[in-house]
Length: 61
Image (cartoon, rainbow, N blue to C red):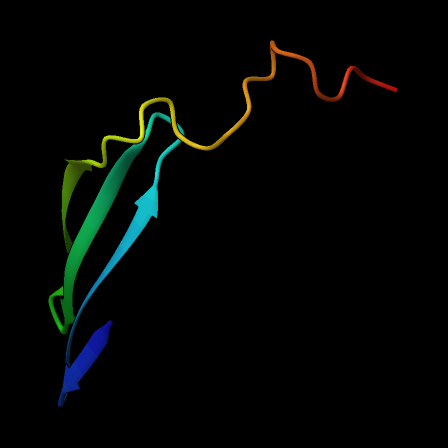
């Protein structure tokens, strides 16, 4: 989500981290630069949806 008013842009996006948390970035950008505010939310997803490289999967060439 992003909005713009003249030279000022504000927005928000999130990233799901491998440990199951959600990293939320709210930002503002204008003539003074890019200023993010980062927070974290527990999604209750446990270890996330990424496979552990130590538990099978690709073993090399």
